[in-house]
Image (cartoon, rainbow, N blue to C red; front, side, top):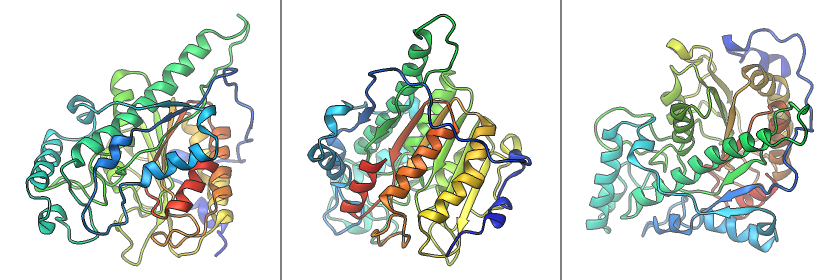
Length: 370
């Protein structure tokens, strides 16, 4: 159904204040001439796989990379392999117990790979472990860290070498995109004993990237926008009381929709009060017009007021038309328009990471558009 603009205003958390007008979106932000966008991808992420049928296929990232190659786009970007995230980097948001348990479960799956009860601790169709789960998740995490650090450093260098002494405009490096799997935005939601991975996620790559740049001082404020059809319960939980991070999520909600979190009233706590904004969709079949209305009326004004030093995009494409997991109708063109609105709403560096998206053709088309 069509999105009601007046109802969207009710979703604004206390930090958003009262906007008397919508921000004017400037499509022209200064970028270094001739600079190539960076694309992070490592084929070793496909080593994490499963002997039983599962929607989180080993080829999710490689399919996108090969599609971009066939489309002739890899020549216009700089392709980088990323690195394997260290325990120190993971600990910027995750506990050592979480890290140890992912390692322990990975080792157990390596030793007994045909034990389905062991490899799928939440039951068939849930998160699955393999002998390469930890390594693949660390590579995904490292790619997103490098994307975040890279756009910040490249933007800093571009500003320092601006064309003329009188040019004081903040210059922004081209956005970076990490084509990674397994996804990450559900990891970190469960603090109880046992395995902490859930929703196909082991380490929360985007959250770790935010944690790394905040810990290093490369950024003082980070915004995370998550348009995956499922609520990023891990990201919300990890930053719920963190005032330096604004988390925004648009997701399907209600009717026991996984992970059953992400209500509009969840606005942050403690020092993070007002730094958590959920846009919970309560019906299937929403399309470009609904999402674009939310971006124009709510998300872009909130982002502009927060004025982050870095914007991280959890780019899940399971809300795309044709992805049976999401039951939504967003087109590749719609995702491209949302991306342009984000780039126009903020003047900070931007890095995106693949989250969900389980129809290979659809996900490839959406990644190409973005």
